[in-house]
Image 1 (cartoon, rainbow, N blue to C red):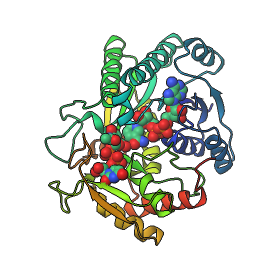
Image 2: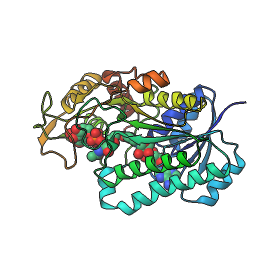
Image 3: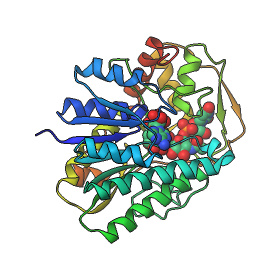
Image 4: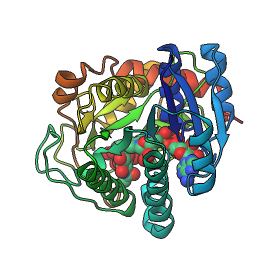
Length: 338
Ligand code: NAD
Ligand code: UD1
């Protein structure tokens, strides 16, 4: 029998890429998404790419009755929980919405899992839980902190899941702390489709390259880094997706509560990414140096050796491939999934 995986937030950016890898590895996939930050078209494209079907429920995870019903209909073996709101700036403006959505949806999901005896959960956390790290590369045992409501929601969920595990040792929970996901599926058929003006670097650069935006604003060139601009650990979304498959396999070994960094271990500055994108696209990316963005840190990259040792997972795609794949998606879909 095929293992059946419930993917919450599966119509979104990372979820849709992960579903491709799941389907290609012969998992059966059920998706719950309220489409608050995504379009059903992404799942149609996933079906086109893989030639396999996805069972989709357009349901809000806050709706506990519907979620319970889905667990009754589908015999779920494992859950990957991507659903959540993720815009840092917006979380500062409307914190209650972020706490309500991200925390309550997780509680509803965990209650349904408990009731239906589903033991395996993979949770999307973020490198944001390391706050402003005292050193790099960052290992999983670094102190945790949050600087905004989005980050705090991730931190609190990690703690809730740990409490849950303490109360029931038969659970298996993998917390995956992603660094900076970028790139798109090789086909160019799915990718990141942000609403409005992108907050994040890669989609912003891609929209400059396609002349939707005039110039990139580089937030700060006075950081203590090799060229003064912020350094991050960009990871290809397909590598990230593969990390979820390895985590699911790990859960079948009944490891209990486990935490992994998913990053490449390499740091690239904003200007390094601009150069790589120019090479990939053959376009010039005009940019202006402006003040630092509030809340940004100088440098953040992972030590991902725990995931390599325990999951047998390692990112294999470099910055050039990340930019080439982002560009292919942007060029083929100038207006995203519209
Ligand atoms: P995304 O917005 O593309 O996907 C999230 C999906 O969740 C969306 O399709 C949205 O419609 C859905 N959703 C939100 N609230 C829901 C609810 N109450 N009920 C049902 N569906 C709901 O985001 P993404 O980039 O794919 O991120 C996936 C997860 O990874 C998120 O939890 C995010 O916080 C986390 N994460 C993302 C990044 C990143 O840079 N993309 C980095 C670290 C962690
Ligand atoms: C952002 C989130 C973080 C989340 C992470 C993972 C913020 C403040 N933080 O981190 O919580 O976990 O994504 O995806 O949003 N930059 C520019 N110009 C731009 C956009 C970005 O110079 O228009 C710079 C930033 O200053 C930073 C780098 O590019 O140095 C990456 O920025 P971004 O893509 O927003 O990711 P993070 O800030 O690392």
